[in-house]
Amino acid sequence: MKPEAVELSIVLPVFNEAQSLPVLWEELQAVLKTVEDSAEVIVVDDGSTDTSVDFVRLLQVTDSRVRLIRLAQNRGLSSALAAGLRAVRGRIVVTLDSDLQSDPRDIPLLLAQLDRWDAACGWRQARRDPWLKRISSRIANRVRAAVLGDQVRDSACSLRAMHRRCVDGLQFFDGFHRSVPALLRQAGHRVIVVPVNHRPRRFGVSHYGVRNRAWRGVVDMFGVRWLQARRLRYEAREEPPEA
Image 1 (tube, one colour):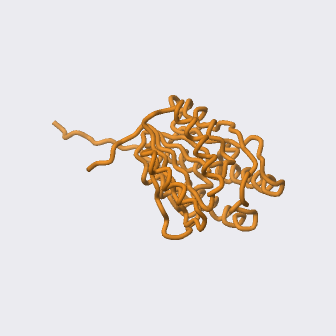
Image 2 (tube, helix red, strand yellow):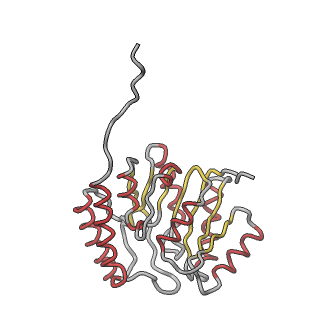
Image 3 (cartoon, rainbow, N blue to C red):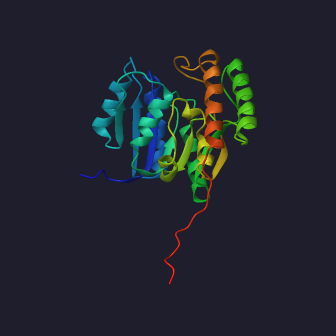
């Protein structure tokens, strides 16, 4: 039987966020009441070793909107995000972090832009991260803007809203989650950047640091630049037979 289409899909990658998920679910429920009844929340577990999956299974007992996708082992944010995006049934797609640093109350702000834009990407205007992470991200975004030629101020912000057609055209690769706005623009989509709230991490520790992402980010950036330079650009039309 063909899966039932919905209006809104929310994709939520999770890795060891058992403490954050109950709080996040309450916040999401409040937002969903004001946004759209026809919705689904796709939780993608990236090999968690805590009780994150147990909590999601409890949600599924009482809420049919919740879907659970489990990666066989921890594969990283790009893999978890791609698995969730490939499974969406919604006309509109939203992505956000599960560590409570993204604020679900910003979702309506992004959705409001989709009448005029193909995608709305968050900009964490006031970062609530440790100073070293803030500085490294600022430098990385400036270098990325120079190399890729775009003006996205916060390429790695996971809080985004887009039409389903944007998802269908995304190129998935290890590290793509750091360059979604650039990839969308390369595919010809109109992207707007919207200032969003950013909150300090409330539970646990960050899974991403300067050491484990700096070099990877550079490699990914030049990979996106390579794709950008080799994008096919041509115009063609079928000619009718001559009379």
